[in-house]
Image 1 (cartoon, helix red, strand yellow):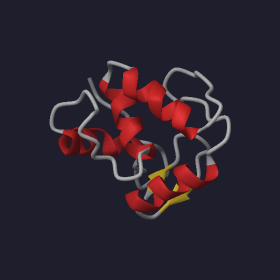
Image 2 (tube, one colour):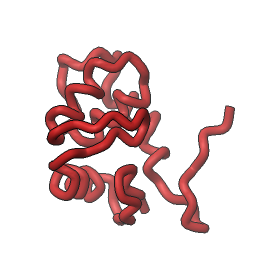
Image 3 (cartoon, one colour):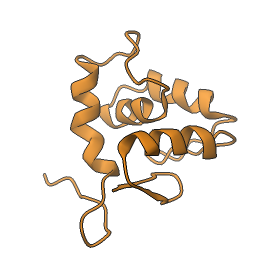
Image 4 (cartoon, helix red, strand yellow):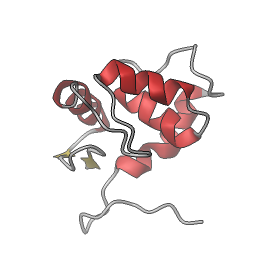
Length: 101
């Protein structure tokens, strides 16, 4: 099960989460990482694209149609998405995973 970082909706598969984000959060999306608001999903994608941290890159892959653009400044793009996929996943109790550091 996966939780939408924008509205908290719960979906069964990661692909469903990608589809949900692209269809339900197209207008005026706010970045769940830093709070910047964009006019549309493309603006948020650009914001994530130019950001230098891996969390924004993971969000970029979540909202991008196929998530495998060669233009993104991330080495090994699929491994990057898999690295942060757990951030959108739910535990059995319904709470999001927290990254242990």
